[in-house]
Structures are given as structure tokens and as C-alpha cells.
Amino acid sequence: MFSGNVTTLEGHRCLWLRLSRLVRDLGSGLLAPLSALLLLHFVLLTLASYALLGSLLNTASLPVPAAAFLVATAAATLSICCDSGHRTTKQVRQLFVLFYWVRCY
Image (tube, rainbow, N blue to C red; front, side):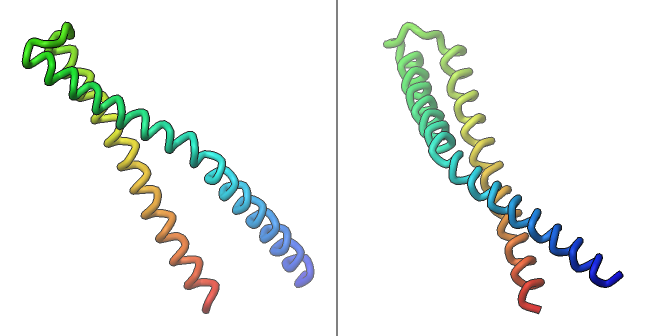
């Protein structure tokens, strides 16, 4: 009975290591596209703010409500992306601290 538990535990350990590697590779693979997405949203926010200021000064052809909507949408999208990334990073950090503590004792 004891050897069965050891083999089951070893199987779960191997699955955990594979899952860990898969998640690490996924994070490495998504780094460039997500960085490009955040850069694109920052550029969109900058251009939308420029369009809004131009609309307020009557030098742009875009109406003020449309420009304000663009700025609000770009700012909300950028804020949501950064906030969710920050929350995820905090959760992963807590899990690493927990697993380090379990591994050491």
C-alpha cells in the first residue's frame, strides 16, 4: 500500500512539473504580444488625447463627444490591462512565497 502512494505521488509530481514548465513557456511566449498590445494602447491613448485637445480648440474635424469617448475607452482599456496584470503578479508572488515556505519546512 505504501509503494502505491509513492508512485501516485511521483506521478502527481511529474504532472506538476510539466504544468509548471508549460505555464512558464506560455508566459515567455506571450511576453512580446502583450507588450506590443500595451504599447499600442498607450499610443492610442496619446493620439486620442491629442484628438480631444484638437477638438476642444476647434482645430480637428473630430467632434468633441467622439474624441472624449476615444480617450475614455483607451484609458479604461489600458487601466484594466495594467490592473489585472498587477493583481495576477501579486497572486503569483503569494503562491511562490507559500510554496517556498512549504518546501523549506
